[in-house]
Length: 105
Image (cartoon, rainbow, N blue to C red; front, side, top):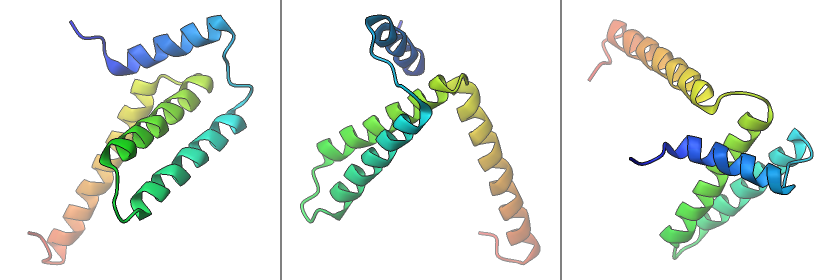
């Protein structure tokens, strides 16, 4: 059975910490997130975009964001679930407004 990818990442974070590789603070993780965003932007601006590299950079961003969640003591599943629930609520509200205004598909 495949291990849930989020749990695998948390396990890797623990192994890295046991080895002495830890983030010094949340600001450092935010700097890494910003760096990953710049690298993604650079790939998106390339005329001959390298989809393999772009995918890797997006993965690095996802890892860094998960690391921030973990570092701050949050369960990444809960954080992502809350975000999905919030997005779903907003989407449903937008659909309701569109329907009321006769703009539904």
